[in-house]
Structure formats: C-alpha cells, structure tokens
Length: 325
Image (tube, rainbow, N blue to C red; front, side):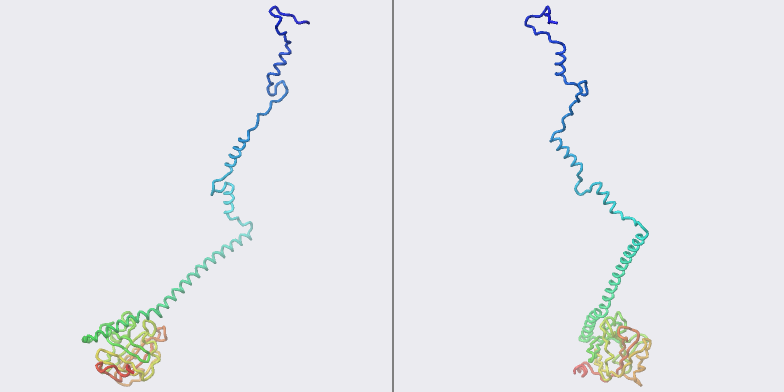
C-alpha cells in the first residue's frame, strides 16, 4: 500500500518510517540486561590493576612476617614440643632412662665427695706446714726477744728475785754439740713457755726442783722435741762427757752428760728427783735433767738425759772452756 501524506505533512517532510525500524534502532541503542531476552550473558567486570595486585601482595607479606626475635606461633609450638622430653615408649627404655639418671646422680655425688676430700687434704697440708715450719719461725722470734730481755736485765745490774714468776726468763742454756742456745724460763706451761720455744724449769708444786745455784739438788727442765722451736730435738745424740752449760746472772754452770733413758712413761716423775732414779747417780749431788717427748712427733713417752755439774764459773771471769773452744 502506497504511503499517504497526512494533512500536516509538507513536501519536505521525511517519509514515515515503519515501526519495525524504530524497534530495531532501539535494540541497537540499549544493551540487553544480563540474562535478558537477548540471550548474551553480561561481560565480567574488569580485574584489578597491576598496582592493586602489588599492594595486595605486600599486605599478604606483612601478615606472614614475624617480629624480629620472636618465633612464629608454629615455630613456638614446635620448640615447646621439643623441650618436653619424650616419654619412654617401652619398659626397657624406661629402665635405661632410670639407669642414666641414677648414674648422673652418682657422678654428681662422687664429684662433690672428691672436692671435699681435696679441700680436706689441702687443709691438712696447711696445718702440717704450720706445725712443722711456721711454729718454729714464730718460736725463733719469741726466743730472740726473750734472750735479749734477759741479757738487758743482766746488763742493768738489777737484783734477781728470790722466786721467778711463771713464764719469766732467768737463764740461757747452751748445748754446743747440738748448736742449741735457748732461754730458760720458770715453769713448764705450754702457752707461756714451751710453745714460745723456751726451755721450762720444773719449779712449781710437787714438780719443783733445784736451781743451778743451789748447793745440792737436781736442776730439771723440759723442752719440745718437735715444733715450736724444738730445742731438744736431738738430745738423743748426746754422749757421756758432752757439755751442757747454763748461764745465769751471776755464773756459768757447766754439766757433763752422764746417761740417757730412751723411753719412760710421762707419769714417771722419779726421773726428776733430787737423786734421779735410773740415772746411775747413787747419792746427793748437783745434777741436771733434760726431759722431752718421744718418739718424734708424738707425746706418748718421755726421753730423759742426765748430767752432773763439773764447773761453776763466775761471769766476771768470762765464758767457760766449753763455750770458748
């Protein structure tokens, strides 16, 4: 059917377009909805760009890192599991573990005991060194001072007392053969006399004996054989006739060794009697008795040496022959 002009149309108007042309144009201008009647699915939205992917990777890396010096949770769990000792899987392994623990305990105990023994040994060695060496050093200093004090008193010309006080020095003893020069003090106290390296005179109580100046009697003295100066260590080497000289403020008294008793009980005080038993002396006289401990380094018994006066020489006349030659 031919097209007809409408009353308002002009010769220049565009001819009427059929309805199907408008629908066709609309279809091209408006895209169909996703899944719409057009049948073509909607396109996926475009993925993230390269910059966004880098930022995401950096975030994932930060989440995966751990603080320096701290282990990750998984690592900490593994370390804790490793720190817990594994339980024995059988009785045999349990017994072995028990034996290992027992051996470790024994080793520790043995080490402690060994250290204690070593310490004890060192202490004992120090004590022995003190007894055998240092006490002699100290005694040497003490005897030097005592001897100087005695000689100073004599030089001043002070009158001697009738009785000397315990621990007071009053004489000097010489044993030339043994190279002994030692002060003699009153009493036999260990701390006051003997341990200071001096020789002590039996002058108290039941043990009181004569003085060198007495016209009759036994001048008895005691001295250490070992340690603390050990003045009588070698008196066992004396032979009959060997001189023993005692110097006092007024005179020199020279005795000659007469006899020796190698061993007797400490309770045997008859050896210091005015006429000592066992000495060989048969009557009153002017005697000297030296007493000391025996065997060496013990105090089980006593060794006794006796002598007899052979010369009394005033100090004003000089030293006796025994000290000059």
